[in-house]
Image (tube, rainbow, N blue to C red; front, side, top):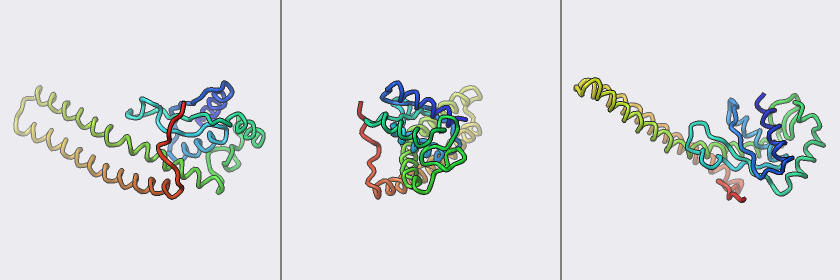
Length: 198
């Protein structure tokens, strides 16, 4: 299971004193990854967003930064949940395994979820617009081979305009989601993106 692999990697990074833990998750939902980020915070690694240099990719890496009290946090988490490294209950999660937050952990998981949504929204505009420009170039190459007839130009141009219209709609939805999640973080006085320290 991906959560156990990631948790083992996180604990290994902690035992070696690594200042950061970087991972590319394979969870079905962002909410599940937010729950993992909550667990990571309990063992001394806080979520800080996309790993440098990967934010514009379709499948970025995510970074967790070690906190000054990471060793103490990890020891306390393992003492309270001795089976966590063997598939047992995780800090702040419901018994029975998995990443289902307890009611008392849910508000913090929700804030982590909002941070992740803002990270995803920040990627949308640049990434999708870049893909649309690539499609425009591919369309021009297609026309060069088929010949610039009126029908082929209308076909390629119409398809590109339809995709651009979907991009504009997606951009509007993205901005609305950004406003909703930014408001949640503001209400909690949670600054995002965080200031990264070395």
